Length: 370
Ligand SMILES: Cc1ncc(COP(=O)(O)O)c(C=O)c1O
Image 1 (cartoon, helix red, strand yellow):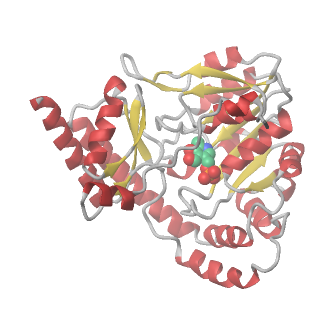
Image 2: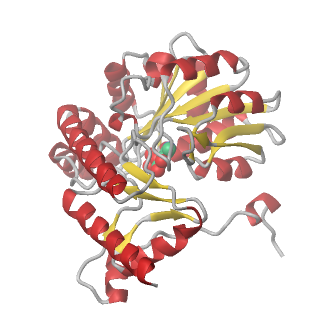
């Protein structure tokens, strides 16, 4: 009998998220809403739709495996050399390519926990150890929702090839500030690559939260990971990118790149999205305004919600997490629970968020009366 590697056998099987149409059918309502995947609620940008239609005519040909036009557009936009840029089939694939490029078996990958769910999985797939450093309270008496960079620096050992710092952190939405990040980067050994995962960078409004691309300058062991899936509205198209201070880091990602995995459509869509940045900024501003409204509404209800710098908010519901998420789902609202810890809720349209708040009130009333 064939047998996958034990690390792969131990991985949990993929569990698809709930689909709103299926849920609506199941519970007999017209409509369910999904606030679970940190997508933006806006439709694709008009320029993207146009670019996709035009690029569709070329799909009998393989994509440009070097993504030359997109790489140049990113380099121009961010003021770096094309050699510092690597594109990938979503930022998540670049995470895997980084692990392939930097982690021999028995080396390690360090990151805060809880953070982006993929980090422990990619460590296992690479045969590397995952060094998981617990989040710490971001404010006195508050829940553990913030990077503890001193502890993360202390946890790095001579096996550690990669460190992910998710800023702002998925799923808690908290962000690390410039001074603490600089101190951390100063403490990381030169042979460890620090990847600043800035999937949600475009939603950051706190001026003290540094732009990874600025803090990276002059630090050859730092790279920044970003995606077109969130602010740029291309989650279904799959494009992410890495910008590294040292071109050799970007080159290592290009060497492990799954050939042709950034499709012709994806490259065209990403270039068109970059050309629509003003519109994207306006959309992000709307998401941020709605994030602040949602945060205030949740705090009015007595919930201890941290300031989020992303397009989602975190409800630290502890042991009640699974029950409350299930009760919301029974009311046609899909959120993202992390059992025993909390629920992540993506900022939706004002209408969707009002539906969520009403469902939450209803759940609260039911709990109080039972
Ligand atoms: C922190 C973080 N990094 C990376 C990704 C991957 O994004 P994608 O693969 O869609 O580009 C996500 C997606 O949810 C994320 O939350």
